[in-house]
Amino acid sequence: MNYSITETSRLTGLSKYTLRYYEKEELIPQIKRDSKGYRIYTQQDLEWLTFLLNIRQTGMPISKIKKFSQMRFNTKTILTRRQMLVEHQQNILEQTRKLQKSMAAIDAKIARYDRYLKASDELKE
Amino acid sequence: MNYSITETSRLTGLSKYTLRYYEKEELIPQIKRDSKGYRIYTQQDLEWLTFLLNIRQTGMPISKIKKFSQMRFNTKTILTRRQMLVEHQQNILEQTRKLQKSMAAIDAKIARYDRYLKASDELKE
DNA sequence: ATATAGCTTAGAGTGCACTATAACGCAAGG
DNA sequence: CCTTGCGTTATAGTGCACTCTAAGCTATAT
Image (tube, rainbow over all chains, first blue to last red; front, top):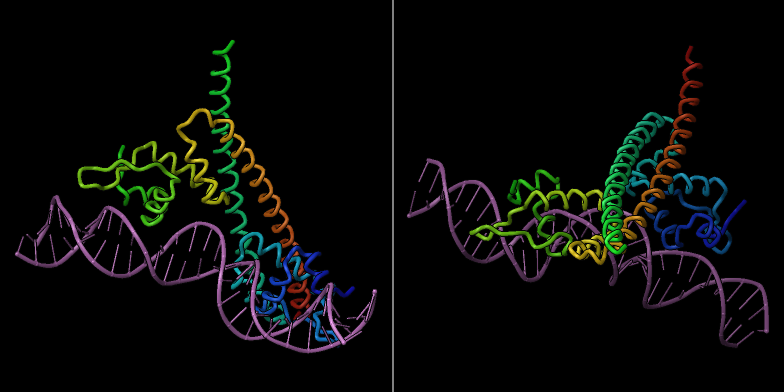
């Protein structure tokens, strides 16, 4: 139920450096400490990190994630947070369109290569 | 049929700085010059830039685009180029999966918000 | 003729997101 | 008792992809 920074790093794929950096940058709350002052990540912290990772990996900048995270424990901010997420969904859709367009362009180029390869192959028969 | 750097910038959305940078970095060939030494982009240059933009915007690093571009006029490299593009398609598929996963996670969070908003709204009736 | 607006170059600066270093502390195992 | 192996902090460095500056050169418009 509780995890050290090493375990959390392994579970999330984020380096220890990054975990400390995210905490300093207020992307995650101040993590609880044990008697030695070591960080103890809870299940809730892990879930939060997992969500952050999703939005981070799809391009939400640190600065926005920071704003979003700072509103986390204030229910008055729910509409604002909702709006931020809706905007990020628009962003994701835009990225998806770019990926599709790029995929199609590459398909076309590969098809051209294959026609060339087939044609030069036939010369050898 | 031919374009100045300003027109090319407008047509591609790349800044003039970036166009010169791409040329210096060999992502595009040495562009033809007019009597004044100004760059003249041909239709073919534009098409190449459009393709580069597609793969760049989907995350292919400059270093790889450079390798790819340098092979462009050598038909012996077609299989290598083909392989690079296939690998980039794998990359695009992976990105697509991440976008979908993130989209689903955001959907779920928005649904949570909406349940909260609905519940607190009902208290006011 | 001179201001404006375009172009050139080499090289410096920026912003982002990490990533690493230095210098240190503690506590359990051989 | 001291090495290993965690942890801490503040701060510096890295890599990428631009982005801009400085200094200068034309050609056309007023």
